[in-house]
Amino acid sequence: MGLDQYAYINATREEGELTADTEFYWRKHSRLQTLMEQLWLEEGRAIEELNCADFELTRDHIERLQEAVNTGYKEYPCIGGFFYGHQFQEEAVAANRPEDERFVQSALAALDRGERVIYHPWW
Image 1 (tube, rainbow, N blue to C red):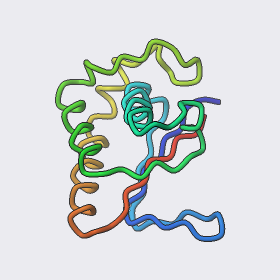
Image 2 (image 1 turned 120 degrees about the vertical axis):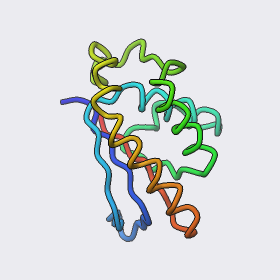
Image 3 (image 1 turned 180 degrees about the vertical axis):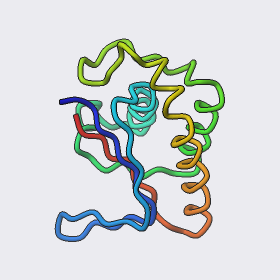
Image 4 (image 1 turned 60 degrees about the horizontal axis):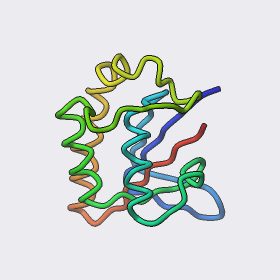
């Protein structure tokens, strides 16, 4: 049990199935989830819906993620979320940095090509 996070490049959903050219995966990356929840709320969505939901990311979202990665997610501490792995969030930030950077670069390139980028958490 716990937080599993996925991101999809060039994503499409048909008949309930999500397919993508490239998939990214994180496990209990609580600060990434905290950032995504903040972005989700800024769009006027309810927080409880960012579970098993597709969140289409924009260039602004990815640029904010890039800034968060560069600063070690200092602006996005996780203060709860039993399933999020908040107990070891500093370690998760360090361990996930290579995947975060790879995702940011892939997502920016995909958006330049006009492709969809989707974030999908499940906890």
